[in-house]
Image (cartoon, rainbow, N blue to C red):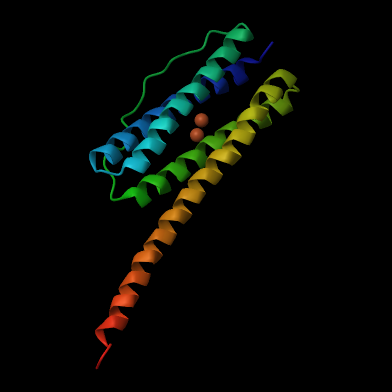
Length: 163
Ligand SMILES: [Fe+2]
Ligand SMILES: [Fe+2]
């Protein structure tokens, strides 16, 4: 039997995964509306994944004989400065999710709840992957920024040619 405290934490995680799905859906919409097709495709895939995570938590609660609770959601951010801001916010969001999953793991270990511990292990690994993917995207954006500086430098060099 899963403790009341852990059931509460798992229900809060359901809300957080649903919120993640919503946050990324808004990012997908903004990216699509602004012609950033790659970012839109990334975020459309992400919104589905997060919904999958939410359902995994729901199924687990049902399997241990608890009814999952579906909560209301707050409005996500719908406008962004640029795609760099989108992914910076996505990284901050993933870090918040990681911290939340770690907190549930700490609680499960404290109460020697092996079933919850085993269930959460997949999410611990998933968060490592998710954070790494977003860090990788931010690196791509950073490098792309340097490409334009490189092109500008070439043009600066061309200004003095033949003088
Ligand atoms: Fe998630
Ligand atoms: Fe995620």
